[in-house]
Length: 229
Image (cartoon, rainbow, N blue to C red; front, top):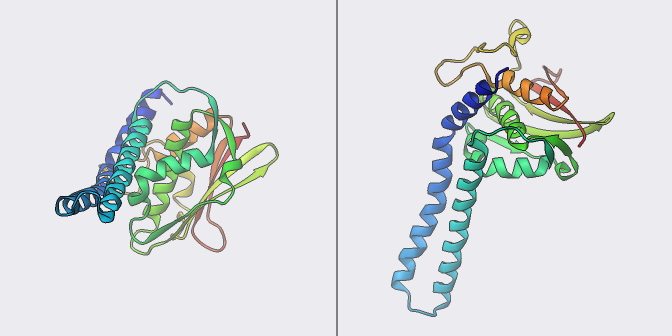
């Protein structure tokens, strides 16, 4: 897969997420404006004035973090292989994707030991692959809600990062085609059918692979296997 295809998908995916990012920023901005108005009516040195200033500072820092991480991950770049942890990637992408990952009564369940998951590759590319899988899981539960669970396990020198949803699963007739470039069962233009193909390309470039299955208990389980770094 050409690098331009990866970057085109990155821009398309992050473009879809702009509304969610603006929602998160607006929430914190409301706090800033609310406490700024309160400061106008409070006398200098009052305890509530100091507390309000602290709230403004905290919300301002959160806005800055959201914009910083979104800008970092959306920016086209030449891949650089370096060590990174799953915890760092997850904590940073959740900052700006929280709204999109929680749409439709979906609850994101994070792993408990992600700090120990160390890999080697381009962290921004791996984040793109992980986001594609996560958002697929959210869409699979549209209209019904459920848990979107991220897990990890060490197997024979590799890390297995799993994403499971509580949706209807992938129809058997569709399963063989999900990694085909441009294949989608969802309405365009918001869906290009490039999420899983790009994710597989990125994970393969790290020396790993990606598989999907419909567990007996229901839903869909996606496993990203990546060599330990």
